[in-house]
Length: 230
Image (cartoon, rainbow, N blue to C red):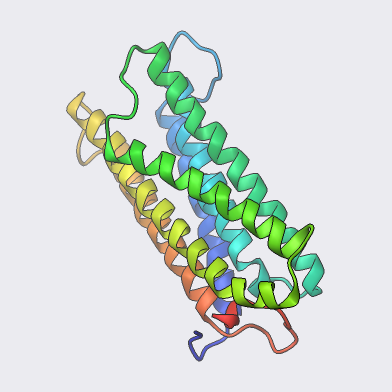
């Protein structure tokens, strides 16, 4: 399935929103929340790693991996490798990001896996890993037959978009959850930090929307291997 417009303008918007999102989450965690740390007496600095890695890793780099077939004027095999590597980076950063949430909870004597956000997060990272392994085996090495690849591609794309949409939605839930905790602890509901967190969540949703639009839009004419197979 494809919409009758070119993908290139959408991919430019994806890049711009990705940069903006990365800057916004870093401003929030470093300027407003005090910075990032793997070990610290202030355990909140450990938690701050979580939103940074989840947004920049799983959402932004993962999104760039998805649109790489539509945004890069390169040969099919090169784009396939870039797609694979970017998804691998996103997956690793996502796993580390989830680990930091557990680390923060454990060192702060907070229960784990009590919220919808945490349940979805575990499910998403597992599904993301399965998707990556399947893609590696079928499309990269050792690689399936041409018939298997052809039959698998639409389902690979559809399942990948499903997991990505879940990730974007769960990221928005995560921002809401954390902001609610902060506001219940005294953070001004209409202060600059609250507005920044809300706008970061909105931007995350917009980023995901333009990733999906890029996938559904028409690839460049010279592109001989794209998501238009949907």
